[in-house]
Image 1 (cartoon, helix red, strand yellow):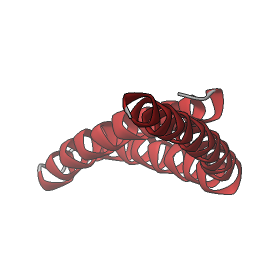
Image 2 (tube, helix red, strand yellow):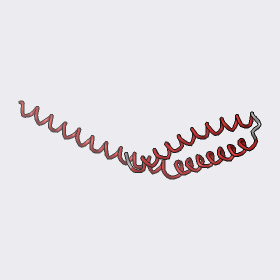
Image 3 (spheres, helix red, strand yellow):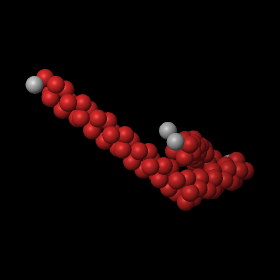
Image 4 (cartoon, one colour):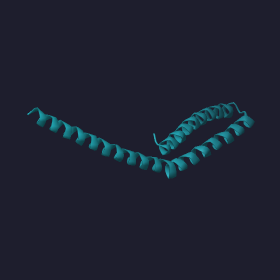
Length: 104
């Protein structure tokens, strides 16, 4: 995995954790609101919005910078792999044809 792809994976993992937190805070906030626990509901709402803000920032970073770089390096690696594969395929093909000539 390229360093750029690793960066994208780290951001994706951080977002997965963040989404888990958002679900938890949202659920507890709903309970606190339903139970008319105003102070905890207010504090949970602040925390929930902070989590949304972090998620938005990570999305902007991923979509705007990290993912395109990762995609480009994957394309470069794919092209290099295809070049190597074609080279090896041609080598095997040449070896196969010369060994069949030797058999004659």
